[in-house]
Image (cartoon, rainbow, N blue to C red; front, side):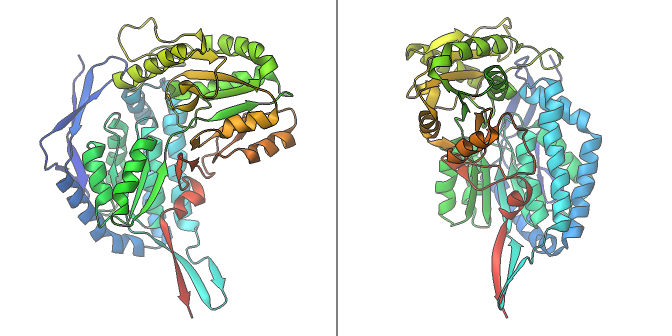
Length: 474
């Protein structure tokens, strides 16, 4: 049994303080199923205190020059980089991603974004346009409530918090209660960096209590939420009562179109990787692989062979490609979707419901083929290492199937002709498309169409989400 870490205080006005509530939330290691930490189960009055602190800090923080805010964020960036190994260890334990992947993805990406927002704070032109006698200026929106998920717990915090801080806003954060420990490590860094009191505040707890209190609070000027579409709809409803701005990054069921002239082996191999990243617990996962119907059998054989090489293992094992899912609840959910796929008649060619591990929330690589577009596994977000292979008749049919979804977050296209691939990408109703395995760009805008969300994160577009536009007529 490991020692249980006590992180039962919340961070308000530059200090770790006790919650007004007495409840505690246990944090479970998904590999060992042991309780490794406890955090505070915050209450609405905690949110009131945090929002009051953020509101009080806003005038001075927003009045600082961009260069002055940049200096604070650069200090955070420097300290975070010094502690990258510690952050990797914490996040790998917290949510199960193998450490060799977590270092580059769970920690590397957010560290790049902290540095990027530190730079943008100092270089962005807030007085950027003149239209005749009008000066158009951009000003920080005010107090931002940030509500973040468990699948990329550091990255999603950084995209919201540091964009808002760079813009001149102050923040109240509710991190995930499922995998919160890396966020606490980040707040320790922020505290050491000496940000002014009240600029950044943290209240842990459950969404229906702390999250709703943030969304409903009349002194919160904007809510930025990442999570399920169901929860995002609720945030929108609650926030509407005070007519505040809402940014949402929600679910996805992304299609990967492999055109008839593509290198099938390369496309399927890379597509399996895009589906299984983070054990499939990725909102942009390319979970629907669309292949020419007359090559379905060939594509399936390649996918099965590639997927079998995705070794299920412990997060500290260098040979592991798939760690555990984040929780027992998630494991049960994913297995139920696999059951549903079988029940509805999809062909299960690789079944990950059972692994060699009797402890830990593991699900192995799973591949379905002969999946019909109307099947549940082709329409609902599973959030596990489950690939659905769908045959199509021609290019128009592929685009139709890809767009026949309530979601529109990501997608992929493979073709020997880059111009053809780009033309198809432009027809896809989705916020991001990978062409021939293009690399993820941490500075490019990220967000979705339809029920995948509202607004964009990362880079300049992410900064501008937290700005109001004012016209000064002279």
